[in-house]
Image: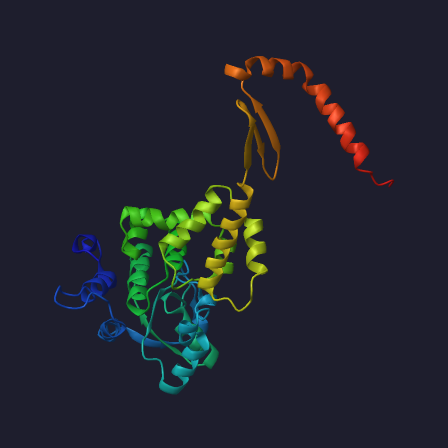
Length: 321
């Protein structure tokens, strides 16, 4: 994150951001150990009954889909629970005091909290006094340090921040985005129905181009939520999240191409017949060589259509029922 974007931060958000901003000679990737060391130095860690901790803020990842892709299998809740059972909770979660006396709100670490809850043990938590904006920034920074969100997870997270009433500046700070970057994310969440996105999943390997392509299909009216739902639900259940996204784009593109496939012929100069899936149209120019023919046809077209339709009916026996 650029230095100028840290100027307004205070407390833990500023500390996290500055401690994980690597000098130019170091790798730019933020590491989880660095954040864990920071948390251990804050001298505010205590063990809390998970039953006293409530959810807070927007969900920062599509948790039901963290194990959709084979290479993400180790990120599942079961694996985390087993790890904490065998080795203990290595990294504290971050909480703040709730308005209700004796209760807390989790800022980040929902999966660690869920694992400890399942194990029936207290959770190690770093308790800090944070306002909403600072809590969101801390949440985004920690998440970037532990595992990069997929493009779609970032889009959903950004949209959730905005839907909660926060300013775009907060969403940009949380996810380290430019104005254009935020626009790319919200274009997807505003065009792709949330239920369709949930059916697809996190699509960890798929970036902006594919999600933007899907958004464009919805924007252009070539794909509806109902059609997309049908395509996804009829797809092979073994498809990964990324493969579901590819499948939906491919099928929607095919259908759009079929719908747009119009055959055009010109039997006589100035006369055009267009035949598509939804209609057949005849165009005769009222200028040039076909001007007189257009006028002649105009006076006879109704009779011509009636005779042709009668001929069609006589040659195509109808059901008696």
